[in-house]
Length: 317
Image (tube, rainbow, N blue to C red):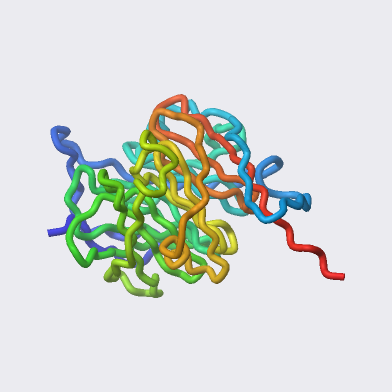
């Protein structure tokens, strides 16, 4: 039986799922929190965009260090998103929180959601600003069902249970498409990561995931030494670009129509070397899509930025 259950929609919902206990600890997983920090983006995402013509190719800079997280509460950063009002970081172990950081990597605010969790691994964001906590990990628990904890901009909190069609999976990458679909990419040691998806229908507390296809990370990776373990994913604002990451590299596809699943399955991605870190699991786009931001588990946790330069269409005369 899945450890997952549903909760009614409310600002302080009652939870019906049991408090999970990590093996050998005898203690329930601590509660999750949400940090909403309004932080300016003076460097990574706002302001006028310079038109740089790069004929026929997307290019990526070498990763640059922005700052490092040293807060002892953030020992295992596993998910990250940006929005118009800040940067949100998910820690997948106790105190299992989402923290708002400024661009000096300092925690500014923490708000408790009041929900117990099992294994939170990634964050997603809908175009309307709704945040989705991906309680999707399966390296400790065998989970034929997983949970998305949803917080709308007005503060309403609810949970959606997602059922796999074919048994338990371990996953660390959650993406929310512009079309309103939840997309999960599994973490497979053999490099064959499965993609599951489902439309996030309003008011539905339980949904059936659909197997959409799989990615062969062994064929995609730039060398035999590169990681094949998918640890995070993100969708650019506007929904026309999607990226997944491993411990060593990131892979980006274009999705002009917003269908990120079709884009990932249609052809080879562009490979982006990431900064070497001890256990890199988080990735997101800056709010304007000009940068990829990454961080890692373990402290200090550096926040790196990769500049993206895309071809600019000729101006209409």
